[in-house]
Amino acid sequence: MRLRPTILGLSFEFSKKVNVQQEIMKKYSTLTLVVALAFCLSQSVQAQANKEAAKFAREGAEASKNQDWEKAIDLFRKATDRDRKFAPNLAVAYQQRGFAAANDQKFQDAIRDFGEAIKINSRDARIYEQRAAVEMKMNDSDKALADYSEAIKLSPDEVRYYLYRGYIYEIKGNVKNSMADTEKALKLDKHNAEALSRKERLQKVQSMNAPAAAPAASKSP
Image: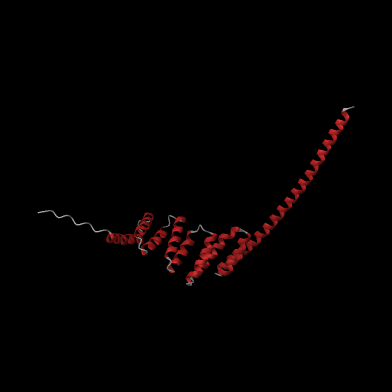
């Protein structure tokens, strides 16, 4: 008879724990449902954003065909805001507008657009090359030198980048570095006419700058 209260007590405690667990499970189930609904809503919003992004991208591509770069950039920017996979399209639009500006002698506009393209896609050597070409037209050889150096880092087997940088070194009077780039160009293309011509020209400069040999000591009669 003494065991009964204890058993009843244990039964009560067990029942209490079960009730607590049930409450926890209810809360957990509710939380899981909320998370699931939020995820579904997020997926739905993302799907809608992707549809809008694709629509803007299609319109941007059409504007690019018509060379309406202002409209193309605006549309690709909207597409990219909704889906980052369209960022390369935006970079190309900036690049194309920069190229068009350079052709119209609007060099500052071109530099700005190439800079925007590089912010989006810093791994494209051609953008650095195009910006460097404009910088040379603006007589900013130091910036052009830096951009060709970046292009070489990204595409170390591209002969023309060594030729361009070698040319800048040459006009700056840096014969040593110009010769080094010329040799690299010839290593990649041993028959390159421009590199062969520059090497010959640089060798003449080196010969002219070489210290004169000391006269031989005369023998005593």
